[in-house]
Length: 359
Image (cartoon, rainbow, N blue to C red; front, top):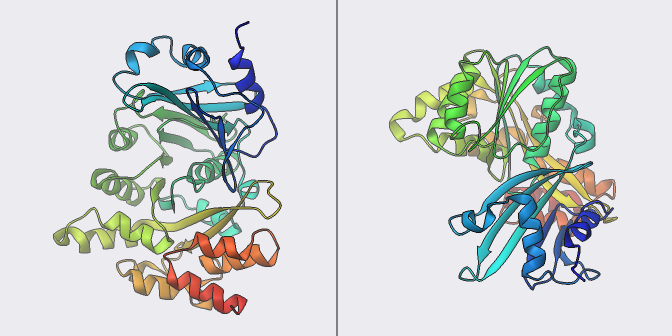
C-alpha cells in the first residue's frame, strides 16, 4: 500500500509543536527546528524517494527538469499556514532534500511579536528610514509584517512591499497594498525600490538591503518624503548603521553619513531566544529612536553611537540590548545562560549583563 506522505506532512504542519521549519531528506530522518534547536520527529518514518516525489509534484509539476539546474523555491497556501518551500539536490545530485518554512496566515501585531512601544512611535513618522536588523532567523520578516499591520490599522497609505518571497498577505484596512516578489514581479530588490519611487507610495518595505544600490535608493526615498522600512543583517543597532554605510567608499562616506543623519527615523535590532517554558520564542530588542535626530550627530561613529545608547537619559524611548535581555530574564521568560550565549562576541553587552546580574 502506497504511503500517503502528503497527509503525514500536512498533519505535522498543523500540529501544535512550536517549530518554524521542517527538514526533509530522502532516506533520512524528518527534522523540525524548535526554539532549542533541531529535533527528530520520531513518530514519522524516513521518506523514501517516492515520498519526496509526492511532495515535489505538488510544489512544482516540472520539478525533475528544474531541480537539475537550481533549487526550487515555491510558496504553498494551506488553510491556516503559508509554506515557503525550497527543494534541492545534495550529495552529488544523488539525494532529494527539502526545507519547509511554516508561516502563520494570522498577521502578527507589535504586541504579539514583543516589539516595544517605541516602535509604534517611530511608525508615526511620515518620512524617513527605519532599519530592522539581526541575524538570519531573528524574526526580521515577522517584525516588518507587524509594523505594516500597524500602519494598515492607523494610516491611509499606499504601501509597496518588495519581498523574496512574499510571506504575509495584507488585506486593506486603512491602507492599500502592492506586494511584489523578487524573481516573479521584479528582478531584484534594487530594481523594485527604483520602480516603487514612480508608483506613488507612502510606505515602502524593502525585504533586504544587501548592496550599495539598494542602500543608496532607500536613503534617497526616505529623504524625499516616503517612509522606508528595510531589513539587513547586523548584530547590533549601531552595527546596522555602519553596515549601511560600509557599501560606500571613503570619498562618498561623509555625504552618506549626512544623508543617513537626515533621514534615519530609527533602528530595531533583534534576537530571538527560546522561552524557559519551551512554548516558543521571546524577542529581545535594541532600539535607536532617532525621531528627534538625537543620534544623528554620531551616526558615523559606532563607538560614540553605542556610548550614547548606553546613557540613561538616551533610553527614554530607546532601548539597549542588555536592558531588554535583563528585563526578559527578570520576568523569568528566558534563562540567563541562554541570554549570555546569544550575545557571544559582543563583549560590551556581556559585560553589562554580568554587572546587572552580579556574575
